[in-house]
Amino acid sequence: MQTTQLGSSDLNVSRLCFGCWQLNPKFWGQVDIAGWEAAVRGALDAGINFIDTADAYGDGGAEEELGRFLAAAGLRDKFVIATKFFWNFTDGDARFADTTPDYIIRACESSLRRLRTDHIDLYQIHSWDALTRPDEVARAFATLKQAGKVRWFGVSNLNPEQMDLYRDHFEITTLQPGYSLLDRRIEQRELPYCLRHGIGVINYSPLYRGLLGGRYTADSRIPDGRAFGPFFHDEGLRIVAEALATAKTIAAEHDLTMAQLALRWTLTHPAISSAIVGVKKPDHILGAIKATEAPLSQEVWHRVGNLFSAAVAQVEALES
Image 1 (spheres, rainbow, N blue to C red):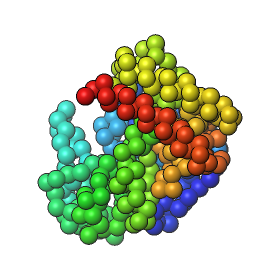
Image 2 (cartoon, one colour):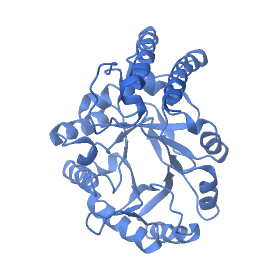
Image 3 (cartoon, helix red, strand yellow):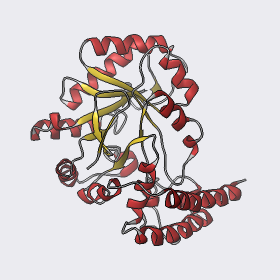
Image 4 (cartoon, rainbow, N blue to C red):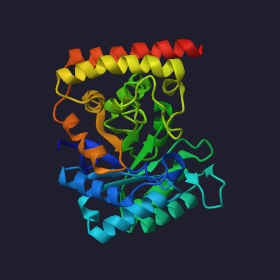
């Protein structure tokens, strides 16, 4: 497994990151925990040392499961752990954005408790909060860093202007955005910005909620938990399925599965440090490892990218 330095930090992480969003029953249903634990062990055996989660995944449930297992198995020190905060969900079912200093401190303490660890390697703001001044966020971060509770800080789902506001007050180690063959919007601004400023990029949804994994066809009934958006239904799904059929031929030419091709395409971009793969069972992560072995050539990268860009344009035309 290839590794890379994460931004300007001293964190050296695997090119694949073990994603824990799947431990969120609201979106993904119940998970076979034994299978998930086997996947964590399998990932470690394969050289994957990077795990990403968030307090919002299952309202603390994902952190609880991860912390319980790593503590029981004695594996905490084998992984770089990244988690996120943003949603204040402490008052029943109500959720609201909260990056006030007091809440950041409380949220971090709660994550540390659930993860059963004394420090978080990478602590990320899950989204942009327009109501809290960046200097106030920085004040909380300084407190956590001085106490040794957080090593590095990152952001998620932010644009360059928002990152600029934060960078005036604290160092941003990473950006976590969505990026895939079906969602290339960050190529224009966010990825060049991160390259310019030495910010590592950990992209989520490289398989676009499984659609780029290769198992769906125009006739597939995609589970409701992931089937939101025009690519998953009717004519939109047919158009994407046609692109997938062509892409599978390209993948086979390079002895890759469709999922491996989609991941390798993402990882070939020079701004991408690590791609997050959502995991429920061992083959979800183990089947992805081959994607990290080498980059795609420029010709193939553009060939595959153009194929799906054309499909996206067709779907968008249907929506207009």
